[in-house]
Image (cartoon, rainbow, N blue to C red):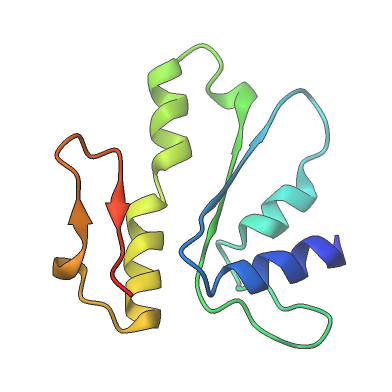
Length: 108
């Protein structure tokens, strides 16, 4: 868990979003911790996650509705992109979004 938190804290500084889908009936308490909606993660060296870059969705809540699964998985992505841009000082208006909305280019 500590290694995973460290990787998430590191990746928050990059244009990376992590989506975790919990499949089955396991205890997903740790996945909720990694999702860090209530409080930013802090690694064992004390470094704090600079932005939210993780979304956790338990599949069982959406398994009968593929549309709900899709919306839950992608729900935080726009905010995560905006937070990354704020962190890097990039104006959201400077993003290049391809016409099919499947790709976003972030300028250097």
